[in-house]
Every structure is written in C-alpha cells, then in structure tokens.
Length: 252
Image 1 (cartoon, rainbow, N blue to C red):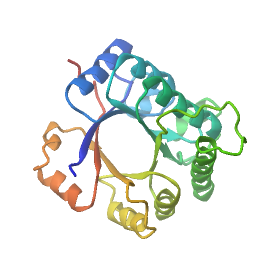
Image 2 (cartoon, helix red, strand yellow):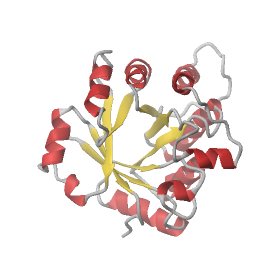
Image 3 (cartoon, rainbow, N blue to C red):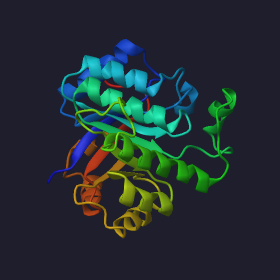
Image 4 (cartoon, rainbow, N blue to C red):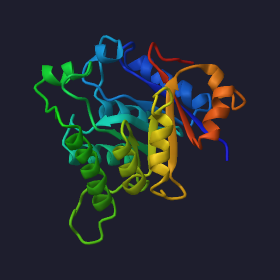
C-alpha cells in the first residue's frame, strides 16, 4: 500500500481567503488531507496572527468537498478535553469526511511556545507526566463518548465518520499510550529519537490499521515516492507523510 502525502499549513502568514484557496489547492493537487496547527498567537509559528483551530477547520470543511482534514496537534491544554472532543466531532460531521484528530501534550513552562499560554493566563502544567496523563484522559474520554452504548453521554455529538486520533509523541510513554489507546502516532521525522519512539509503539502491538505518520518541512520533491527520504520513511513503516508549510501556503 502506498504512503499518503498530506499538506499542513499555519494561519500566521495569510488571511482567510488565501487559506481557503490553499485548502482548495491541496484538494485539487491530490493531497490526502490538509492539517492545521493549534496555536493562540502567530509568532509561535513565525507569523503575525493565528486562527483558532476548530473554527478554521469548520470553515475549510464548508469550502472543500473531498479532502480530509486534520489538526496537528490539538494542544490538550488550550481547551477542556471535552470541548476538544466535541470540536473534532463537529468538524467530522460538517465535512462528512474523516477527521484526523491529532493531539499533543502541550508545552513546558520553559519552552519557546510557553509565552502564549502565559499571555492569556492559560493552564500550563510543569510536570511532563501530568501532561502525558491529560492526553491519556482525552483518549479514554473520546472512546467512551464516541462508543457510548450505556447512555452516559446522551445527545453528545457522535459523527458518522468517527475521527482518527493521532498522538504527537515526544517520549516513550506517549508512544506506548498511542499504541494502546489511539489510532495512530505522529513523530517529527527530524527528531533524534524518532526510531526509538516508533519502536516503543510497535512493542505494544497496535491494531493492524494503526496509522504511522510523520511530519517534515514542505518540499515538493517529497511527493515522489522514489525520493531517498520517502524510501527511508517507507522502510520505517510510515503510512502518511505530512508536509508542513511554515510560510505562505500555496494557492491555485
């Protein structure tokens, strides 16, 4: 089975009409999905503004027809975990397509991304273990909400296409959590511990349809499956390659 190639964009360098056209460009040019980042301020990704992720995704769902949509990654501290789950379900329902619900543990108080959380007095957890716990809590709650047969969540959104939950990992523990409780894993291709994280995930024997995804800076040459980097990705079992555009996104 061939690897799917996706396109990821930020909102810091373009207004909504440009971002809308970029999503349509990605759809017209055969990408499998278009993914967005989840930041509160543009400078975190080198830009001048930042759109709220689920609002933006809902708008793209309404202005595209076939391309799948995703978040990479939803910061589990930017909203309550229940709100994030309902947001993902809403995008899936509006789009009538698969939604790739990428989730991540959030930043430490000392990282370069922490300032935007501090600026709006948002929760920021210093303990890595607790940040990982919150990812696990989201995965467990989404499983219960979307698979509810007991009536525990009456009238909560359960979309026709249940979102696929992808954990962005930066530790062995998150890799293990992803294997057992999620539908896929995402690793930065350039991460020095990439192969360790992939191996830790495989040791937990994830489901046969588990998604092995990676992201890398956008390079059109990487759309060619014969490219040496693509060949190396295939050798690691990667099933989806997400090309991250950090500047102005492409349009028609």
